[in-house]
Length: 274
Image (tube, rainbow, N blue to C red; front, side):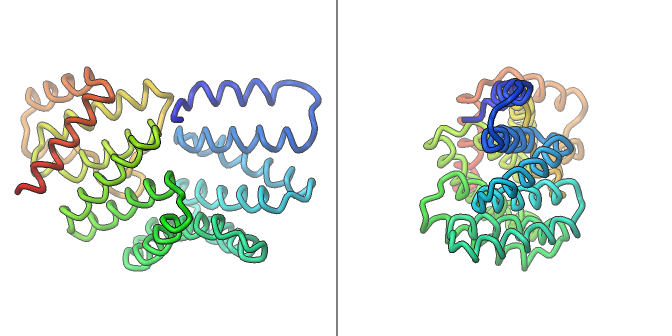
């Protein structure tokens, strides 16, 4: 899990082959959409999900069609096309409820809170995210629990609740480790760096730099910057001189994932003790 570049390569190779059923091409196209979404390549992701939606509609696979429409809402949100994101989310929710698919309803709730967050409707976003998290916990959707926790952490941080933000991000990190989701581990690590930058700027820059290097190593990824949370390095510039900033950044780039996790845990431990 989390080997995005390798997965994207396999999906692109599969789609380059001639022939194959509509269903098989739909699955490969949706897979490419998902992999490029997590890499932050939203243009390719949106076009892939559009094609997948059309293919699934042609095959009559309602569950997969719903997932593709839901995914279009996510991508449109991160592209800033919020009107389209709302339309896709509403369409996906109608499809999910019609089919009685609780898992899909929970996922569409996540899409809806992302749109609200991007609109800076923080109270509404938090309410929807809590509802999505509650459903994800009940249904045992571990990956969704982790990403919902990071989202709720970011919303709490933007409302000035820094300790809560760190606690939720720490819970997400430990869950991502448990389910062996590399990408979400890095996402949580980077988020912890952002939340702690004003308190422990040197360690936060180390962690931010480590996350950036790890994302490059694992084929890409995105951060809470797209939702308006400033990166740790930008925040730390207010308290560190250039030499200290560059030294911390260089040190962070040398950390492997396990070492970065330990730096994050140390920051969280200090926050709880403080």
